[in-house]
Amino acid sequence: MHEDIQEVLFSEEEIAARVAEIGAQITNDYADAVAQDGRGVILISVLRGAAIFMADLARQIELPLEMDYMAVSSYGNGAKSSGVVRILKDLSSEIEGRHVIVAEDILDSGLTLKYLMKNLASRKPASIEVATLLRKKTLQQAKIDCRYIGFECPDQFIVGYGLDFAERYRNLPYIGILKPEVY
Ligand code: IMP
Ligand code: MG
Image (cartoon, rainbow, N blue to C red; front, side):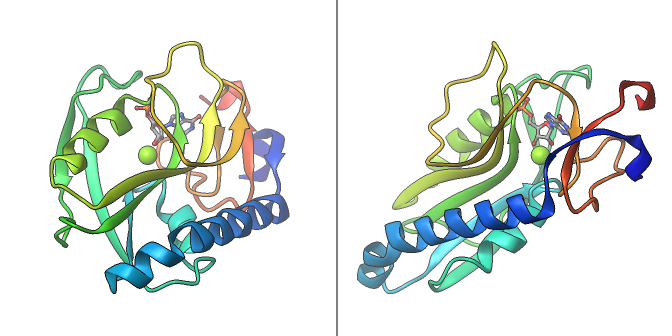
């Protein structure tokens, strides 16, 4: 695996430090809301890329917390996301009246997340925010308010820490640029 990586963008240590910072921020931002509500926040991740980020983030949030998962597939030609999304697995929990945080691995065109946020908002949560580990610097990106952003990254194909190419490299502990000759 390691020999397919052109350049490491974020090391295991850098990721851990940033995830800890975001967790501390969330703990601070939601302490009052959780105390008032009496129920914890619900962390939602979109399978499969964000699962690793969410697992680490959850352990850095010192509040009562639930975890839930959605699986989606986007229609279209595959190479670029079309923004039309089919829900393959829906949440197990009701989110009406709850404080929801959606954990994402990477915001690229933003079309998937835009659809998802609209869908989740229609279920009337008390609040809904996005925590994305990475945001790609691309020219065209749907406008999405991300309250928590781990790192800005270049518009190149990257893998590791949950991000895949053809389902591989998710288990790399760091995030790096994949050598173009690999794909
Ligand atoms: P979009 O924001 O709707 O374009 O799609 C975002 C999704 O595409 C992410 O959740 C990833 O699963 C995937 N994705 C986008 N860019 C990359 C990348 O550089 N490497 C691996 N997956 C990516
Ligand atoms: Mg994803």
